[in-house]
Length: 77
Image (cartoon, rainbow, N blue to C red; front, side, top):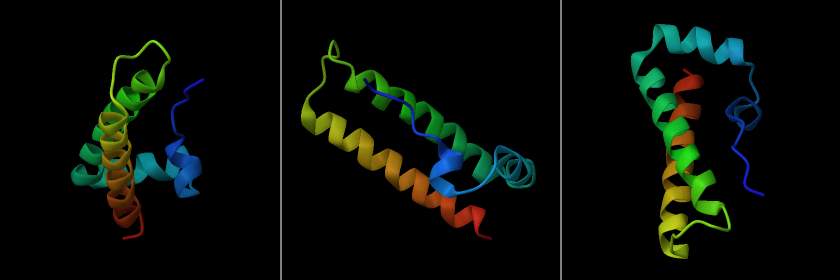
């Protein structure tokens, strides 16, 4: 069963940590919003009833990972 990725767990921080930084950094806020949207797309694409190619799913997952890496870099600032 497909599940959404927990950004806090992946980045080893709390929701409060992320929220404080989001309030101060609009680029980080925008990235987290994009991450949430693409994560939703990945979860939908992973469902057995989804009509998506493996290649398209792989592209979505790579984009999600790239965005997460960008978020991690901004969180370390």
